[in-house]
Image 1 (cartoon, rainbow, N blue to C red):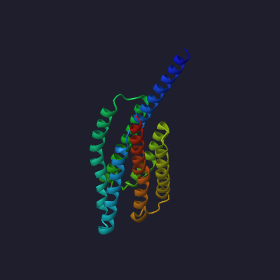
Image 2 (cartoon, rainbow, N blue to C red):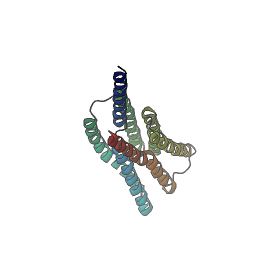
Image 3 (spheres, one colour):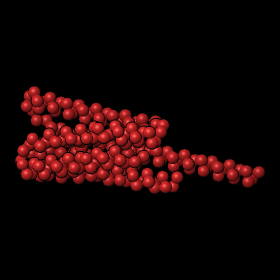
Image 4 (cartoon, rainbow, N blue to C red):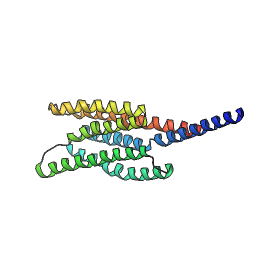
Length: 212
């Protein structure tokens, strides 16, 4: 009888451990989408920075729309493949999906308003996009990290948010946003926000999958 109790307890522990590992693997998933956005932002930002330095033509800023074009096409494709691979969505996944949907709709709103102001009134409000990129996105990433209990998201988001606070205060104080310091700040922030967490998540997912 005693042996039966031990076996039952061991069985429960094994099942619980398997469920925990499965949930952890599923929630951590992989960081491919984050890496895609991180490297895409880095490459586009670096390209614009170089072209501004060489040409001094502000028209190269229209290349920022490459983020919309490339990222907008790649994200749903990668998300669909990820959903097929993972299977059934949990409540946590639905929360995270809705969180990033709000971020996406906010990006559309920011872009639309800035574009309308530029085309119809000649008002340059594009600096607001830096506030979006380094305040709203980092806050969403921090929330994501809290939900998943993932420190790399929290610290990466916090670094991005710190950069965003600096930029927001400079904009409010009418400090000139020179490419010589804004672009390095922006690129560095996205390395910590997207690229490092993306690699951390992939590393953790790989280790968890190896254990299971």
